Amino acid sequence: MRLPILPLLLLPFLELWLMIVIGGETGALAVIVWLVAMIFLGINLLRYLGASSMLRAAQNVRSGGELPAQALADGLFKAVGAVLLIIPGFISDVLALLCFIPLVRRLMLKRWLAKMAANNSQAFHSFSTGGFTRSTGNVYEHQGAANVEPESDGTGILIDQKPESTSSTERKND
Image (cartoon, rainbow, N blue to C red):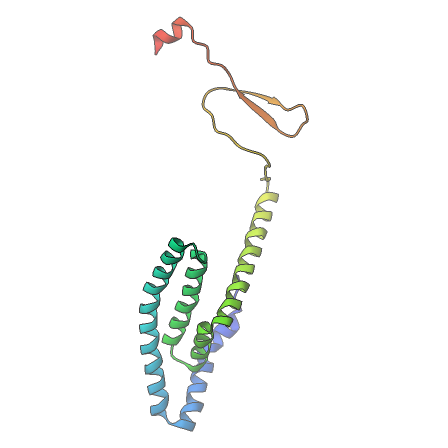
């Protein structure tokens, strides 16, 4: 997943410009109080969310409710929101508040999971075309020597274990 780098580089300047504009309208003290309150709220939310998301995931496993991965992903988005509250600025605060709205969080989770699935299938496709191919069928492990003969229908190789000879001289060597 590639993030556009230009908006990330411009974000601190936009945050600073917005703080100056809002501070000019409401006063510098109001902006400072807002930023300190959001930092305090973000730190406390981060503390609370870490424990509560783990407890909710454990309860979901016990009760057979939603998948624990969904509960953990939900907690992850809330934690991202808490971290965004800790970052000083109004744009990051708006993005943080979006992470706490359940409908927006579900939409972001669906989009993120769709991108993850697309990336995984793309990675698998490049892996399978790079000299490795997908095999269909079962793979069994065995020990000892093997007879390798092609199957009659040409779909694969049948591996049969050779019977071990148990002569009296081999038993004496063991």
